[in-house]
Image (cartoon, rainbow, N blue to C red; front, side):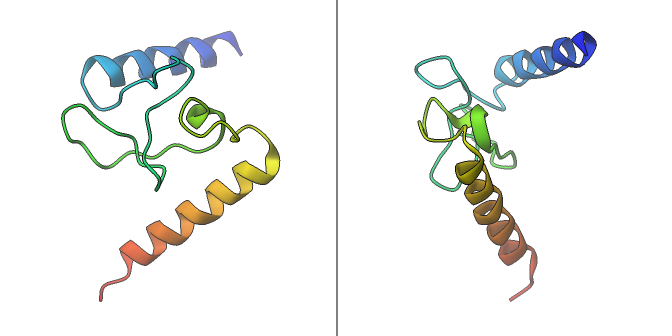
Length: 85
């Protein structure tokens, strides 16, 4: 289990270092917009977050109902964006 936590922490640090993501002002999670997309200092727009990783921006994001809503909203958005118009 510790290897998993170390790997995740390393990937998070790398994401911040390379500019793919930014931490929120409280340093508790990622900076995200209203569509749960990570706000990137370099303008990358392909990563999303749900649940506790959004808690610095969306304070109510650690309980199951909020995580369920995040997952539902994100899946709807990704499905809608994937279907050609």
